[in-house]
Image (cartoon, rainbow, N blue to C red; front, side):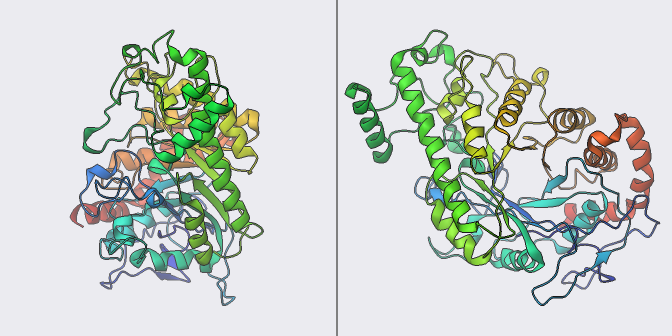
Length: 509
């Protein structure tokens, strides 16, 4: 589903990758500044994050489509594949070797992945802007990037009718990963690929930041479960629906009796309802993770699952037909709901299904659930600082990340991260390094996003230094950003033709 950086790009058995038009990407000929011999192949695919889909027009993702959005929860699926870190053998037993070009060396710190453009695959299938993609991925490979992530559009894959899938441009890429030796596959299974209720939908302006969102418990299945739980608690009157005084999508906590400082969330009914609501989400996570483990048990595949609110087994069964027989490593993405975090009730987190308040840790139960399946806790907003966010909305992303890191540590699970918004500035890079490397060292970090802006000279220089600092991890000895950037300058100069080609091709593609 995505071109990998260590195998598909640059020189493969001494031959550059050639696009369909017969053109080759520019390859820097300067001697390697850092050791280039790091045989790796990476492939990732990702379901879109909240707010990203609206930035482009067709194809429409059914998860956000006004027609399909409410009827096909199983379409919130994406695949992420990570192949072995050693030179991989093909299905025929051949060893694929690769190298060449200028490539920055890698350390033992936090590997960096990069999200590819939203329109990487064309609506009719096939890779969009092949020349640009070749040059861009060669540049990322040379910079020491571990792999890439690609958005899977169900408007492309399932464009004819529900239940009929045409993988088109994704199919050959998936086959490449399988043939090389698959190490990880990630299946996105929820709103924006996250383990949460769809409590803050942006489509048609239903929700706007920093609204508290709304509880999602009014379909016949959840109402039936709530009714049974209320009767078991001896309070059948509590089983008719969610709180009637919890406001609406765009309310503020203090405007609602339920979420205000001493509101209903603290009372007996509030505790009953929030416990049931959050447990439903945890139970769902257990079911899907158990299904994933049973399907992929005992082979060399590491599977990372972003929770789906329905039809998880169907998706995983389909994945099994492609990636049959491999050992599993699972990770789950959890939403970074940092607005109203500074209030007592944490209303926006509660409506999403995280029973986290000033007096209760809602992320430890999630981490413990992941720990039972050997999963990694994947979290966003790693680049954010409290001072950059809305004080009026009591946004505290740094405090939220610290709480999640502590929960992961207590549960003995690994932590991975992403940046929530596109950032190319040194201030954001510093925050990411501080959080991902100097704090609880993360298992991986995904950088949003590849495009012409990333390849602008100043942004590229900063990015190269950032990747090197992340790769060095704590072994970097606390070297300052300026020192790393000076070392990176020679590499940036050597790759200038390649980066210029990538930037121009992306802009003109």
